Amino acid sequence: MSTLDLNMRALKEKTWLVGLICTVFLLYPNIAWFLCDLSFVEPEKHILFYIFFAFRTLFLWGVMWSLIIYNMRMLRTLNFYKRAGWNLLLALVALGLYMFITMVVLNFNYDNFMSIVAFQFIIAGLLGALLGYIHLLYTSQREKEKEIERLQVENLQSRCDALMNQINPHFFFNSLNGVSALVRRGEDERTLEYVDKLSDIFRYTLHSDSAMLVSLGEELKFVEAFSHVMEVRFASKLLFEVNVPAEKHSLRIPVLSLLPLLENVAVHNTVDSEHRMMVKISLNERDQLVVENPIYPKLQKPVTNGIGLKNLQSRFELMMGTKVEASDQNGVFRVVMQLKK
Image 1 (cartoon, rainbow, N blue to C red):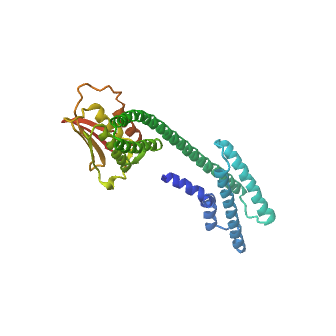
Image 2 (image 1 turned 90 degrees about the horizontal axis):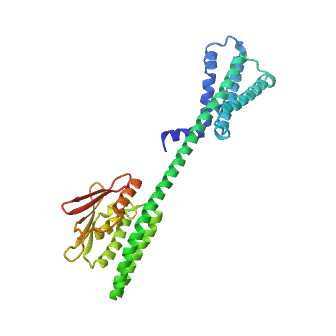
Image 3 (image 1 turned 135 degrees about the vertical axis):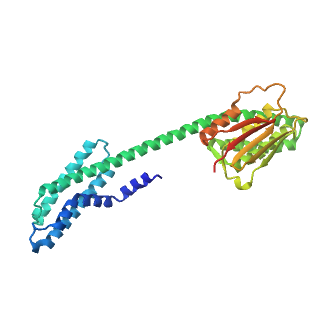
């Protein structure tokens, strides 16, 4: 919460204090004058005059406090002239009540300068209107900002959902090929184990529909299940090495960030007995996740739509505000992703 938010909340919660400050501001000329010169009051009536002035102060404070509450909690118009009109009307009603109490009920006749008193009540009405107007303007602006933030989040979620929908069908199709291969070879035990790991992967991908960011630990558990599936699919010629300290598993990462990278390893490289593939996943000193693998280009360039890495880059820009660095140097393809605490 910003300092301005805290100040506005304090203003709303301590209207009595704001009213008191405004009252002192309105009566300051009288206070200064009375402390210096009471020649217009008979000496034996000084104490009675001070009691009268205390009553006047409390009355004006009550009027000011009531106007502030009325403007902040009840009067919702953004038309300043209409707001000022209502406040002036209330201030004049309060002035009439004050005159009735002092002159008729209490028979105090010390307000020799009634025009000054009337002016103070009018200023009180205008002050109440101004404070209420400023408060309503601020509240309306904050509501608009919150609505804009909500729309931005919804837009971000819809864009992320669209990107996620590009990943799942591609992965599911390749996974089913592994099941069919094991079934054809009659390897029942490995098929059951493969299906168990596949169910873990599918469960995680279903969870991804409701989560944009997950912990690095969750993503690495997914990699563990995924690596088993890929090792079966490539007859242990595609292996994974994960080197991430356990204390760093709480770092945040967009869900399913590693899937397109690991899938691309098989799509763009030759993986066989002569080209055994080791995919390394590690964390550097800047809390960046590094995924790297040797490059064994296929003889025939694969036909792909190229959405894997672009998809990942788009999601990191949307959710993390950072860019994914991809490089191809010295026969090693490397992707670096900045994680969030």
